[in-house]
Image (cartoon, rainbow, N blue to C red):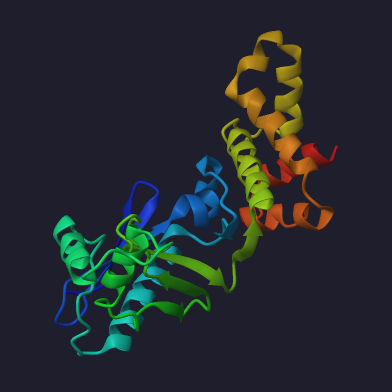
Length: 250
């Protein structure tokens, strides 16, 4: 079976066939890591966002490359006990049985069981992979902890990526993207024209569009000048993004 990367809502689900074992499941959140989708995402402490100029098909190809490289890394060896998603209840019970005693003081049952499961999971396929596009993706084995979801895959370096984005910056970029989407939907009207129309209508203040304008301005003011300068490039240099930045700078 070849590596597959399939869109499921705002996530790419990657299936990697590991020789001699079950398939490994990886998830990449587009809401967290791709400009086109970040308008509906919550900010995390640290983020990385692919520019709008990086198309969905290119992201999919990157992920297929990651999967192929993972298969090559483990080769045909028996890698032992790879989890496809999160360990089943049966796996968890077996792990508790293997502990042989209650967790050490301060460790906690969840951590102890996750650690026991970890000993049965080959970890040499996890790590960083630089694909043909020049971007580097990190694959981490979060699924060894049964309190987490699938293994996580995300971009950390390379062309067309805004890497190392802190929480405040991500919140600002997300609000900028929401306003960019509003302007793009208004058939060629500039952000200034849309805002003037809203100001003339006293009923507009309770609308999502008005909120998109005021929210973007609030978040934009919290950004440094150097960070503000990166927004249009991250959008893929769209006309709507240029218009939004002109309004925010006015």
